[in-house]
Every structure is written in structure tokens, then in C-alpha cells.
Length: 504
Image 1: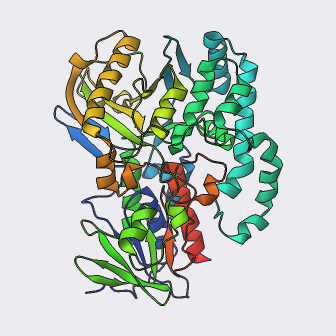
Image 2 (image 1 turned 90 degrees about the vertical axis):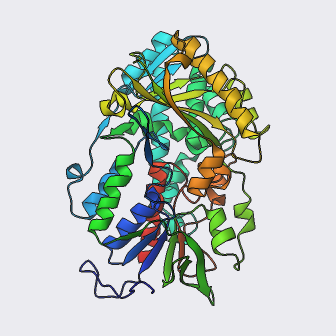
Image 3 (image 1 turned 180 degrees about the horizontal axis):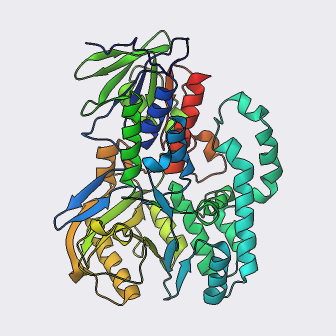
């Protein structure tokens, strides 16, 4: 039987609020459901998996090693707090976090070690002491990054780029005034190389391109505002790990009346005469005039809208990078490691050429190690650690992944063992691997691309799919494959944009 579509909430205004179907219980879908539920819509979330979270899920390996499977960095926590505040709740009664200090431990190929402290002045002093770059130069760069973010976020991240009204806002004037320092005609790497002479510091800031699956040697210098999220606003750790974000928001969604239907993937979005009429699953057909897809935009069109014309230019944009992740239970503790740790390659340009041009994995990859047991001791047995070990790789295009996994595992172990001065492989007590093929299967991300399309050209932001359909009335989109992009904060902002579009 179709879901009852006339359920009316006490949160509604006197005007009738149409029921909404949300496809996918990823973080953006959950946040959109909360916002729409609070605005009086009867919201049903259809999720193909047995539980919520999408890429943001958790699991445990034998021996008692818990892992956050996907995202590991948390910035802009106010976006989560806002959802509880909208519901009239104190966020701290439901969701807690702390600011990380230090943020990241950096290990360079030449053996140099650098700590990124939360305090910008302390970080700048560390850079001067370890790399010889004047602290004033570092502080100037970080200040410019913050100014660029403050000037542009209101226009380019928090609103639809595909609505004329956006460009009539006063925020646009701030963004236009910031254009000279945004470096629209240069790449991130060029921008950083002009700011700093030490190649290690350039590499450190180049790595922020990976936050949306892009290549710093191709991505526009506008992305150089990303460091401000960590160094200006802060990097945070949620109590209990990243998965607690999704868990707390699902609890909030259920409290405001959102229904979740797990193990029930949507098989088709139904349309008639240019508008949405409902969704079909294996269990039933449901009537809905509003649908929000948190599914990757490509399979949304290819699989769920097979009879509707697709925006081919948008869907054909180059995909972002993916990830190869080794989850290791490690049989000792490393005092020199923090929650976030980066072990850089010796030749960063060659590494990105391998990913985006040769479509393979570098022989000398940069390695990211996340250890939540440093903040949540129960995530590993006493005296042990849970290592989330990630390498940036191309999305799946038919590569021979089994061979690449074996080769990359060997390279990763060699790098970690050399830079830590300890043979790591004998310490592995439990292991699991997630590669682009598995990421695609679980999350419907095409080729396992983590962020939808890449940002490897100046117009990439404008070429992302909008948060609404221009041709089908009642169809909206949120999540990492559409505007404003991937990662926890941008997914939450996409949900905010969608809720605003539906309500206006």
C-alpha cells in the first residue's frame, strides 16, 4: 500500500506541506530529512542498506578494533549544531565534540616531522623552526585563506549557484571584491609555490586539494581557501567517532517524525507530464510529489530515471579520485602519532599524474593514517591502536585492483616502517580492505569516486549538478555529487540548500 500522504504535523503552518521521499540515508539525506521534517513535511527516507550513514558507517574487526569506515575529518561542526538548534534542542545534550590540538602530524619523505597545531601562531612558529619559512609568511597565507573563505562562502557554498536570485545578493559583492586574491587563473600548486619557497610547505598546502578528490596541479587556486577550515575554524573530533554524527542526526530525525525504510532501495522515480509523482521499490509504489535524491547524480538518472533525458554534459564531467583503505588492528601504541597523520610521497606531482593521467596508483603514495583510539580508547584493546590507512587512488575504470592492492600494501608498509623506525607488518593483528569497487557497491558512487566530479578546472563548481532539476518539477538533489560538493560540511550545506529551495 502507498504511504499515507496526508499526515499533518504540529510543526506545519496552515498551508499544506507535501510529503517528501528522500532517496538514501547518507549524511546529506539525513540532514535534508531533518530540515524538511521540521518545516512540516511528512518525510520518508528510503535506504538500500540495512542501516544509515552511506560512506559514514562503522564496523568492528576481530579482537575489538572499531573503525569509522569512511569520512575521518570533521570541520564546521556548527552545521550539525544548527540542526539540533532548529529543533529547539541543546546540541550538547545529543552530540559532543572537541577541537583537536594538534590537528595533524606530518612526516615528509626526507625524514622531517612537523606538527600542525590548532593555534595558528604556534603552527607558524613550528614551520619556521622546522622548515625555515618565516612565521609571518605562514600567518599571512592563513589570513588570506580566511579572508577568501569569508568573502565567498556565503555565495558559492551556502546558496544555489543555479538560481538567478543568488547573484542579486549582497554576498556577491563580497565575492567579487575577493576575486583578485582567489587566483582564478592559476592552480593551487602555482598559488602555493608563489607563497612559499620550501617545497615541503607547498606540498603540505597542496594536499588540501584531496579534500574534494582533486589534483592541486590542475585544481584552481580558489581551493586554497580550504586550509582555513582546519587552521582558522578548527578540526574537531566527535565523541565516539565520526559515526556518532550520523547516529545523533538519525535519532533527531526520528524524533521529528521522519520515517526510515531500510533494505528498501528505490528502483525508479516515477514521473508524469514533467513532474514527480512518486517512487517505486520492490515492495510497493509510493505517491510523492517531492523527491530528494541523496544518491550519486549519475545513477539517479541512469537507473532511477531511465525514460527521462539526462544532462549528459554534467554527467560526463571527470570524476574525482577514490580511496584504497587498509583497516589494521595494530598490536602496540605509537606515541608520536596523533588522530590524523600524513606520510608524504617524495614526488607529489608524479603521484597525482599517476592518479589522474595514468589512472593507476603511484609507486610512492602519500599515506594518511587515522587513529581514533587516541581519543576513544575503547576503539582498540589496551596497548593497541586502530589504524585507518588510506591512499588516494583513481576511481574504478576497470583497473586490475587485486594486483594494485598487493603492490600498494607493500609500498605503504615500507613507507610507514621507514618513517616510524619500526617494522609495521608484524604488528598487524586484524585487517580489512575497502577499494573503489567496494565503495561503488555500497554507496552507488560511480567508480567509487568519493566526491562525484573532480574540481580540476576553473569552472568545475558551476558544472556540478544543481540541487534541483530544471526539467522535472519536484525533483531535488543533495550529497557529494552535486553542489556544493563532497565532504561532511558541504553535504550538510547541500541539504540546507535543498530545504530552502523546497520551502521557497
